[in-house]
Length: 216
Image (cartoon, rainbow, N blue to C red; front, top):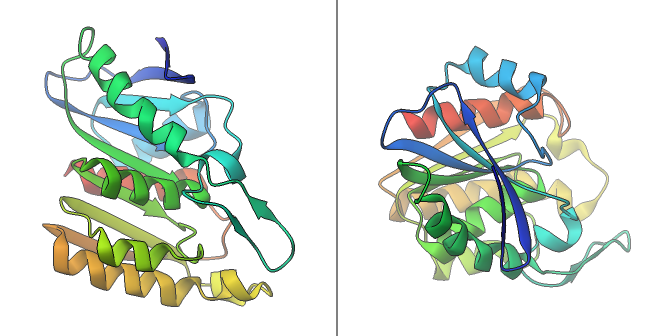
C-alpha cells in the first residue's frame, strides 16, 4: 500500500500475516521496501508478524535531522525532520481504515535512529528503537533531557564506532550513555545493546533485533 500524506510518501507492507493489534514499525533505515535481506534479518531475529511503514525518497541529512546543524567536516544538516513528524499522525489515521494495528514504534539506523527517538519524544508513541543512532547530533541529549520519552526504548551501538576521526561522531558512546540514563528515568523499559563492529556493520540485523525487543 502506498500513502502520500502531508507531502511525504510512505510504503506500508506486511511481514507475514499480522493478527489484529499487531505492532506497526515506522522503519527509518534507508529501506524503501521489505527487501529479501531485510526480511531474512527479521525472520532470523524471530520478529513476529507485523506492519511496516517505510518513508520513500528520503534525504538523510534533511529528513532525519530535527534542527539545522553542521558537522566539523563541513557536512550540513538541513534539520527538516518536522516534515516527517507531521506526516505520521495523518499516516496512522489513514492506515487505520485498512489495518488493525496496535502499538507504533519508530525504529531507525544512524541518522534514522536519531529521528526515531526524536519522533517518539515528539509524538508520544509507544516506544522507539535507535540502532547506532546519531545521538551525537548537536543539542540532542539536551533536547532529550527536556522531552524525556516514555514507553519502551531500545538503544544500540557498535563497539568500534568510537574509533572514528570525526570529533562529533567520536562522542557518540558518551551521548548514547547519556540518552540511556535519561530514558531509564522516564521510560517504562529502556535497554542498551552493544553490537560488534563499526557503524556500517549489519544494519538490517541491528534494526531487526531492536524490533524483536520492542515487540516482546
